[in-house]
Image 1 (spheres, one colour):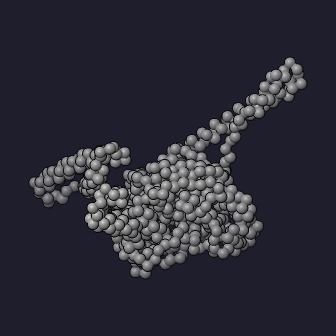
Image 2 (tube, rainbow, N blue to C red):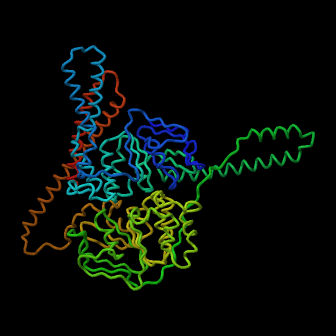
Length: 638
């Protein structure tokens, strides 16, 4: 589908991508991985023709539709959420208008054998094929379903887009791209502004997506669940593995080990041959053997070990000064903005040395609590206090607004550093991979990952005993996240962290506060304990309602025995009917899925004489029936 051929991208004397080639085939789901600055985003821009290579070329078919979601984008204003989302269907309305014009033109013609008439028939069929993908669901219903899946509430639909944050506007752009159903999705860190529930919905969507995907993400679990191929960019070269991310790590390790073993064996062989040549170079009886070995060494294809980029952040937080036993405590906390209450009746206690995670949907109050803890926001009611000698280091989510874009990397630290630490600024920046000329870069030109690292470096300037980190790993590459996690595990102070990254939290925190439905609930233990206790597989199920357990107590004594038996029999009959209904639905769903799968195979490779239009209509009818049965099954199973 898309061919990248001998592509090189250079800036001045620096080569970012060096003669790379790979192919994006239909239904490929590629994870594009590598360190921040390796050139991943550049590859997506090159495919979209937003940037030109120094040499090489990219072949994209003329009829290939591409949906591109960049990390940073301009957002539309002046429309409501639903109005802006519905602009995704503008091409459908244009096609419907064209179809009407063709229909009117054909009705007025009688030159059925002419080439022009034939071309109009072909175009009409092409348009019908495209529209067929959208006819099983109304555009408005599809838009609403997608927006809800990405975390919007229905009451948000009529709000102007400019009243939402950049992260929520990114979700609107993502919804528009998904609704257009492009042939290829190019997604640059799409989960950075999604909460756990939305990530799960998006993950499920991409699993069944019919087109190709090229995905940049630093979420290991997301990559494993979505992709079937991993393309690594390292030091300007690419390495292509036909497996998901975790398997790629294993194969890459094996490849490097095999290369090293083969290289060492070859070096020993070369050394022995060179010793033989030197030893017998001037001995006439050995001259033929010497010459033979010299020629063999000249012809030998030397094994090279692939160069690896082993640079990574090397973080060690300063020792934390001792605080009081209670770091933060709140009773009956009621917090919100203006007239809106975000959460109520919250009891929160954070003790010295604890590592605490705040989890839940976006908008439920995690960042709001952070602002209360750091003193940026006063609650509506309730009591709260910070403990004795608590010194807070706060990493806010909105680094775009907090860092001064006109400062250089070095100036960002130099402006706030005091005392002896000023002599160590270059060392601190070096630990976060800002070396040489990097420290003179303006903040405005830094990537998202670089800004995240710079903001984290600011926390090294003072010995804080409470680190309050709000989504600190957004934009960080996987290796940097692992090293930051290790540093936080060794940190001897108190940690309060908001994150939707389960892998990052696992093994790091020992207490969880769950934000849901205006309430805050404490769970002792780590993320794994929390999930096991709730009998759920992943954090996205936090928002799903947990049914009340039946009472374990005895029936009231004054209730007649006959009435109890009657109700028990009625309950049993209702349960039996429900089970029979679910079984019948599951049987019909299996039949529909089999028929749909068969039609998909026939439509993908039709034979001569096949009624394509009839098959397409049948396919859409089956899909509608399957959707109805799936909705009934879901509501019955709840």
